[in-house]
Length: 209
Image (tube, rainbow, N blue to C red; front, side, top):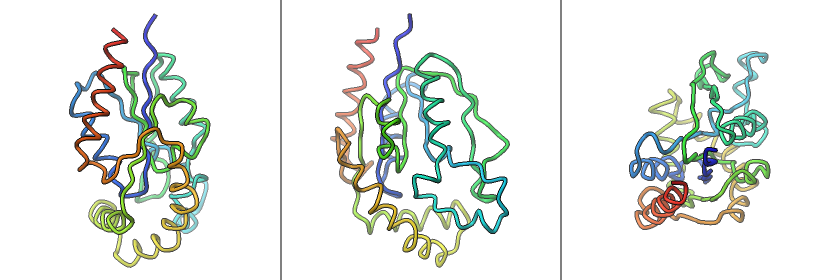
């Protein structure tokens, strides 16, 4: 009988430093130990929509995500089964034809802006973390990322932030903080919090042996 993986949710607003926190935790362990599942790989397929319509998608809204598939995949991993993780194409604004073959590991980190918003996902988590970062830092990070990595213009990023990102953050993401077991201010720079998380994971892994 294999031990069921431990699921750690890492939530927080766009640009809060969730990925830095996840990366810092992962660096403490071998690749064999931790599997990262990113919620933003699970944006809904939009191939049935014309390209113009896809551009209007609010990616910071709960309805943008295929949480049905995410919940199914997490349950499969918890039962020791492999999954094919979807890939999202940000240039075409729909799901890619590619998938990533993933095998279960001892620890699963589920990372995403809205993972604490969905009770089905919360119920699968052993530890729920919220990375809490000031709005000004978050928008600067988002600007840099979207312009550098996603080929966006400054104007389009700002417009999206004002009309979609900020309202969704206030309506859905910020309120989900109340479900967190641990709140980490300032993301990946918070070495004390990351040490505590790593120690907690080590203790869990020792119990599994």
